[in-house]
Image (cartoon, rainbow, N blue to C red; front, side, top):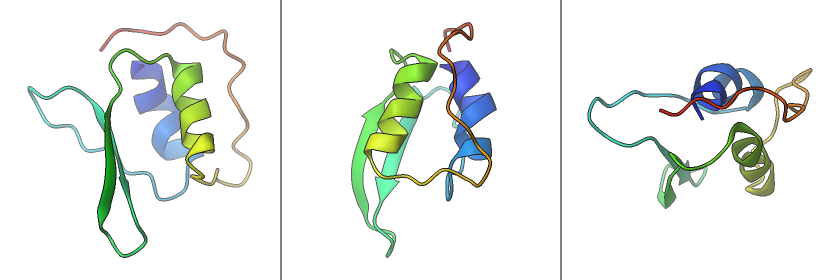
Length: 78
């Protein structure tokens, strides 16, 4: 999961912003284009591959030239 946050999240996905909040479990928060929160998801139990798949399934566009992960990276616990 750390590999996704620090390696894929902002570098591979459009409009993705990481904000660390000490003492809180990591969450993905999805907003409408107008800024209204529509979903909040705790991600501490997800693998890097699962999180990349989730972002794509939610319709978050990839940045140009950002390919998919191959699923063989080590997943660190957060």
